[in-house]
Length: 397
Image (cartoon, rainbow, N blue to C red; front, side, top):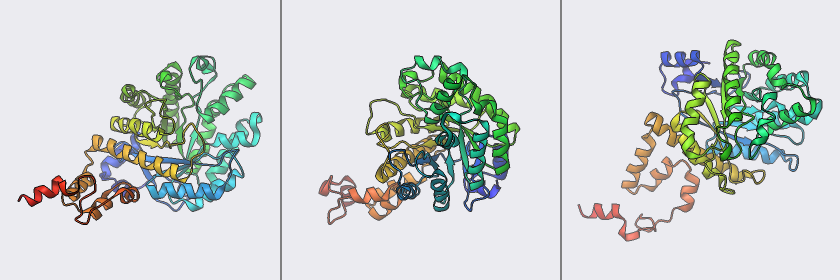
């Protein structure tokens, strides 16, 4: 990790070193890949992740590459490969070659895909090392779900919504044994340390319904993740902590404050959060609302949600819309955190001058801005036409 990378975010050398040494700032980017790492955490801009990946019902590698490229074009800072169908090694290695930004994985997906209920610590470590050797930049490890939660989670409206967490929970129920990601955590850290992979502590018990938010399962797992964070730091592994999920709007700030306290200031990586459960088909919007509030409260990394969340595998346009919605949320949060309004001010100045090209240039999504623009021959838009207040003010001078 270099100070030059920190300088891109406006941090002084002293600030950069202080935040990195405290674990509140991490650099995500494997040294084995030819890319510039991204900074995630305190003092830097809120980052956005986009998920891609094959399913058991649809395995089209060219489509997944196209989706990842669309995410990069729309401004995603990182990609996660969540593939569970086809040749998983080939999918991952192709994405690593094609995508010029950090790539994350959830190793237990591949472990379960290859060995189902026969998985064990050796097969887990094998997959983690295989993926790390390929150059994966960060990995989600669901080490916080333990036997103690298996009964209490059934009291929820939705017992478990995490796919990786579900694989682990079903394995524990079948074998009556403890989570191998938990019992073998120190060995996992050794592999991540060797290859310089950033650990993303997965929240297997994130709420899948707003009514389940901040229940004993979520908070209990979070406490375990706080302890695992300290163990990762002791092992010399960079770590961020994942969070919900579905959270009602009035609880989001509390959620972020709680995570920062329990996990000792480690960067917080949230899915959404979604502020209502009834936005089916529009969950990129419910997610962006929650993401903006979470980012303003101190969340550091937003995982996008697409319009097809809860409905099916996203297509290219779903991916693009998901990234843009999360980028808006991230920027709104950065305005609150850092007063980051330069582009907004430039946009407003361009609007005053009716300088459409400058407006398109400042827009977060120029493609859609140009699509919807409808200008008259005198440069006003079709909403107000000749009654454009900015034009009238200029004429009254």
